[in-house]
Amino acid sequence: SVFKLLFNIEQFYVVGAIIVFLSLLYIYTKKHKQSMLSWVDCIVPSFLLAFAIATVGSLLGGYYVGKETTLFLGIGFEHLDPTSIDASLSYASQIASSITVHPIQLYTAFSSVILFLITRELLKKTSSPGIVTVVGSVLFCIQVFLIEFLRTPDDRMVYLFTLSMNQWMSLIGIIGAIVLFLTKVPRVKV
Image 1 (cartoon, rainbow, N blue to C red):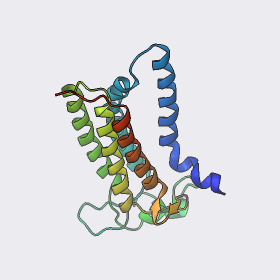
Image 2 (image 1 turned 45 degrees about the horizontal axis):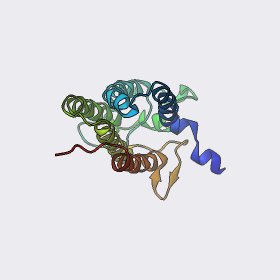
Image 3 (image 1 turned 120 degrees about the horizontal axis):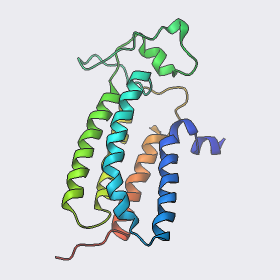
Image 4 (image 1 turned 180 degrees about the vertical axis):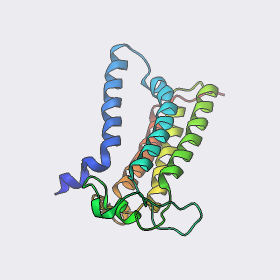
């Protein structure tokens, strides 16, 4: 159904958590007459660091498996026994038990740490609320969009016009960040 296509819990748990969190933050900042953008600017670097740590957990759990590769960076999931695979493990993880794949979790963790460092430095240097949010959001969405090209599709992934739903959500995130920048971020007068 269309509802399942658009709101697949397996693929949008991070997006859903972000939407709920931002909604609650909006209510809080309106109630206390504070700048929501300033709050989010402070949260973005921490989110990126937490995301880096979470992707290492995904690697250890055998989730989000990369496509097959012959590069020296490739890893295998030989520790998974295909004959006793738990139903909760993805089909991609089962395949990766016999081939070498891109370590997309490590790519994501490494790039997320770099994004954390960039946004943390930007937070120290900028006085305009919303800049860290916009830059962090755009860079994060680009990261997700690109890494999805290296991901092995599993049986729960949904594609639309050859792009995964994560890639579509990334494009929507980039557009949203640009709209935020054009409409809500105060301009610094020179």
